[in-house]
Length: 235
Image 1 (cartoon, rainbow, N blue to C red):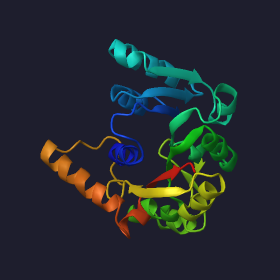
Image 2: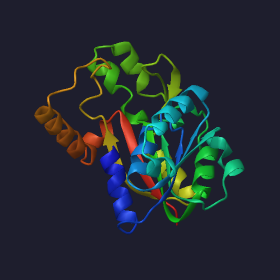
Image 3: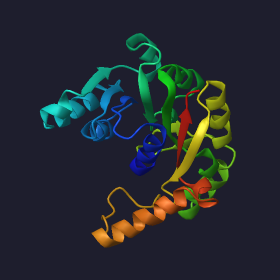
Image 4: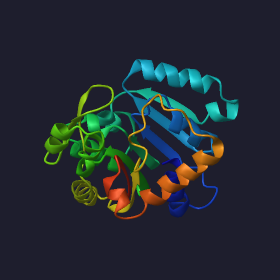
């Protein structure tokens, strides 16, 4: 997915431009630090003090040039209007957050307000139109049947969370002034791999990633991906 994000950034902004990035629900800061190493100024927001502590530890190990481009803020994605002025960012990331929000429209509207004109809103969500795929391929027919008409599911952490439909998010993005520009499928072929699965050898890994990348931008494969990566652009 990082390559998809890089592609969208390269397509929206002049080469070499140092972007102002807001990473909402940044977790351990992996994406934030990757973008800071590329020269961008990144603000990470998370409401979990433990996650912030992990991110701070990782940041402390970075060179001074990277550290000075990163700021971490403890807070919720619903509070961006408290911490930042409208139009303060060129890119806003909201990856793996919406599944924990029962009514995401207000959150998304607030994030769109943080974008400067032409800014990029990047979302990573669970694909509600493919909720039956994982249990179906695992032979759990009861769960698969129940997933067809539901937005709810239990994730691998055992938490009851929700998924989003592409059509609904497309309408929401249009309504908040950041219409959908591009979208991709993520984890088309690899969703069945367990957390403890061995990482393939380098050659096989590169082939696997190439197959996933191709499927993630090709119909009908991307429509049954476990996750969707949507990119909206502020008008």
